Image (tube, rainbow, N blue to C red; front, top):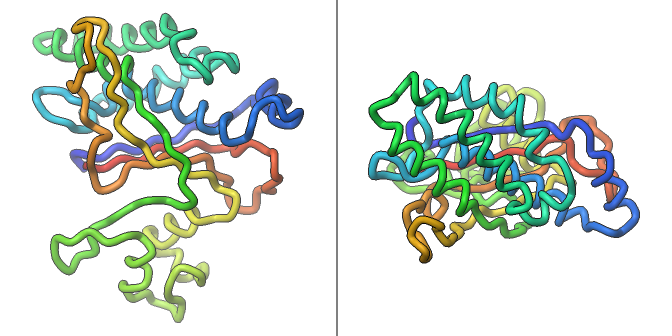
Length: 250
């Protein structure tokens, strides 16, 4: 839907980073946070979310296939190295290259708005976001009985299911056939690590001051990111999660 964005990536080769976590040189939380911040900044650099055409919104769904293709090819290179995850500026040229590849596509697909797109991806890429550790997913949804937003736990308590399960502590395969229940069950699995996305008032190189051009993470129904383990995956204390997800809705 317009005003919503979700993305997921897979940690294929944890290698050096996993060794640093195992040896105590890097905390698991710091590692997961660094991976997510890199992933989100890459999404911003491809215009998947941010201020564009005068309002905060997700990128045009028509561009998703191109953006996904660019990420598959370039994200492993952008995210290479622990220093990059601790300080994104050490890989600034890699992020710029990511954006330039997308802008080459824009030149052919939407040339009349190229200047606007250039500003859009630059603001998002430079400002990024801040992540705050949270114990569980902080997400509110419309529940269908009015315009009020409900927390996901309250939603599970209120809405009827086809089986005898209720609340947040009990789910079964039958009720998880309802995709929204299955989605929430996966989010709440033990071992998953969650972060609330907060707005980062970055300094714009173009304006020489704190810029408020990008407000995409300042509000919304939900805005969270996490490192998650898939079903039946062994969750060890130091083992880095396999999947990293980003969810935002205006």
